[in-house]
Length: 118
Image (cartoon, rainbow, N blue to C red; front, side, top):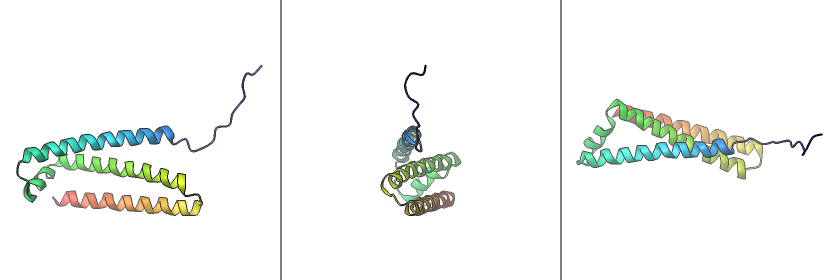
């Protein structure tokens, strides 16, 4: 004899994964911001050369790219959820998702270009 009813669970099930992604990417960005602030204060000279010197070493470039990747994914999760919650026509939502992905990809490429110029 079965107790209870079988319930069909539907949906995208993004809730926990999105929540966790937002928290993890936020933590990465906070740690990076604290490290960057510490390096900026330690530089004591606040001109372009000192600022560029902070980003010149390879480990700092990698950390900056990691922070930008976290920022991009954080933005994607947030904007994707806005499009899914408030834009009902599927074609419009798909176009907005595509535009968001293209914009975030362009921003990431721009960040790489800037970092490797320093």
